[in-house]
Image 1 (cartoon, rainbow, N blue to C red):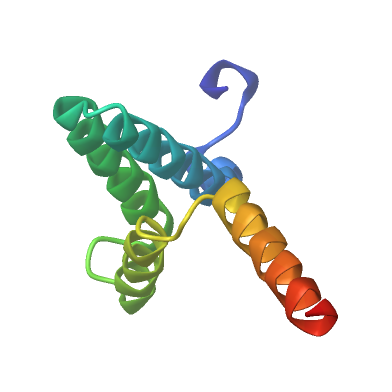
Image 2: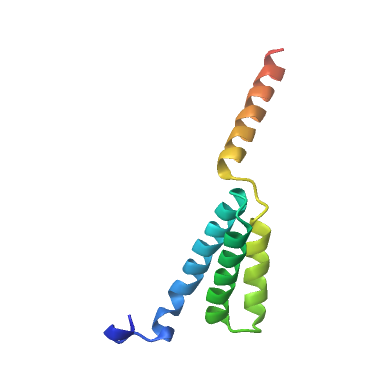
Length: 96
C-alpha cells in the first residue's frame, strides 16, 4: 500500500478490523489447544490496537478489556442450541 501513496494514517481505520481477525484466530487456536498460536495472535491483535489508539491510550485499555471478555463468550451455535432447548422445555411445561 505504501507503493500506492497510502500512509499508516490512511490505513488506520482498518486496524481494528485486523485486530478483530487476530482475536478470532486466537480463539480458534485456543479451541485447538495451540497455546503458541493463541499467544501469537493475541500479541498481533494488541499490536494492531496499539497502532490504532496509541501505546498508553485509555481507548486501548477499553478495547483490550472488551476483546478479552469476548474470549469467554459461548459460541453462537451453542447459544442457539440452548435457546432451542429452553423453548422446547417451555412448550412441554405448557402442554403438561
